[in-house]
Image (cartoon, rainbow, N blue to C red; front, top):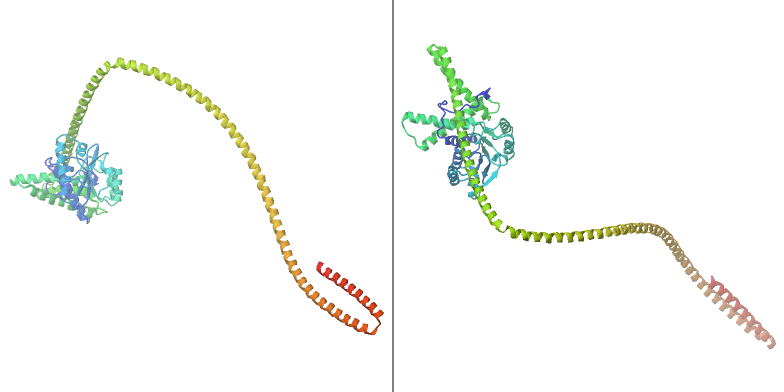
Length: 502
């Protein structure tokens, strides 16, 4: 229901005499409102980086007030782009910017003349900038869903519109989804109406107020505006921090309260119809005041557009003058060139002939090179085929050789196993032979001893027998003993040979 009252102005005091006076009051009031909203949520402006759009009285006065309250304004914009600085704009730079704008300079011209300030061609500073607080003060619907999502992704905590409906409905939805504090333009722009009320009060009292006193009264009034919005949101909204709904409902309540007040007075006087008529008149008057405020805003936008148009026209005129000067310079250069044209033509003709001859030579060399290339290609093709055949042959031979190697390896393994068995058998036979040899030697020693014993016994028998026989018998006996001895020796030799062979 409250969407039908989006352009109502919240605040204290008189609400229906909006004025175009003191346009800087909108920017100052916007900062005071932002400060109160942050304080209500445990934050403060001090040290916060603030991105502002626009380069008008609202954004410039807001930037100056932000500096006064310890915040850091980092951007300002026009319709072609924006300036940014990591350190933040200072008061001297803002003053020089005001002077540059008065002298017809653009925001880009100002950035080029300042150190540490960059001008970026972009539709909006909110597309990529990282900031703590955003203050769109340039145009209706300038902060869209895309810019709102960028602010949410980069940790922005608050957005306060310095222009009516500067944030779109989709952008406001993103604020609510991401817990970003938001105050609409009808609240942020209340400073101008409050200044108009203060001016009327001052004129009525015929007591001039100092700038400081006016500023203090504006601050108190903006505190009341936010307090009224916050209390309304607390009372009527599911989300007590929905200050957008709080501002809309608060405006509706003020109209309803005014109409009821008129009706109560009429009822006390006994003329209810007159009271209802007066209430309706107040409603119409309020709507007329809203329309008039909107017309004032449109007039201001038209003035701004006209100023920009004049700046563009002047820029185009300067560019046209530069083009004319360049045209005159080129004309003079052309006249000078005509004097040298004939000589240049002859030189050019001679150079052309030389170039044609060189081109023909190059063509001949190219054709020759192409023929050589074709021959080389044919040779290379034949060589590749030959290499392929040789490779195939070598591969087949290598495969066969591998097969033979595998067979030889198998045979080698078998031979090695057979050799190992033979070696083992040899070792076994050698051990047995050594054992037999030892037994033979023992047997031989034993036989030799037996032979020696037999010989000794035989010799004793022969000696004894010789004493008993005659000499002839002794001779025969001796001969017989010699024969027996020879036979024994022959028998022993045969035994020895047999043992040796075994």
